[in-house]
Image (cartoon, rainbow, N blue to C red; front, top):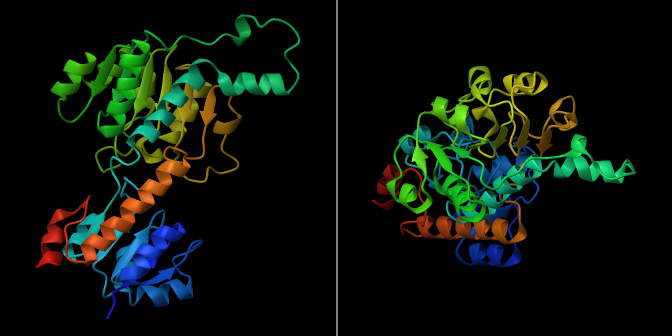
Length: 328
């Protein structure tokens, strides 16, 4: 008898056909709530889950007594109770590497857009306000040669730093839990404490994963250390930053501008002042949002769940202790 999979994120026809060749698939391409009765009925029989952007709680896991593996279509896994999954012997997989370069493109897009005020000045033209040669009131700032401070230097952080160092001649500072000697050699990067980075960098770019240690890592104290001419970029997770402190620092002019792809609450509430600030470029969490990358992420998840439920080690397991249980 085929095992059963619940897929709750859009997959293309080839990916669905691949899953249906090996499993019975209950497909929810537009799931709005985990309380959907049809979803809960399917979950009760499921051996595997494939999807993203759904908060998986212990209470929800209680409704899935046969669950063996989850393949998330994401790199981050803060929506999943990893320790609880491991305790229950449920394997979690994610999609690292697949989206690294695309998300790094987004990070550097925000660096360029904020420095050169691209969104603000495009609106200036659209409104018909460009009636004469621009002056100092419309000037931006250079990117090339400026110091790029990376808060976190994992896969995505390293890809952004590589763009800055090799493409724009930017000196690289980084604060990280562990040293990166290979990147120091390749890029001339220098590891330092977070406070030094904040005081010295022209661009502060946050790429750390969300964890108990990084939640609200950047707040009022950290913003006060930044240069008044500096630009702040966040493409990690919204909760890494104290958003109220960010808004206050921008209003008080403690640093020059911010480029943001992530927020504490998503979608961003309509009453948030951030999108209305000329000094802010706010994007709707588009880090990996290209056709090519999202297709590749979904394919990695399909491959992960197929391997895991077929008794083979998946490509990118998160909680490897659970793999030992599943493979017994």
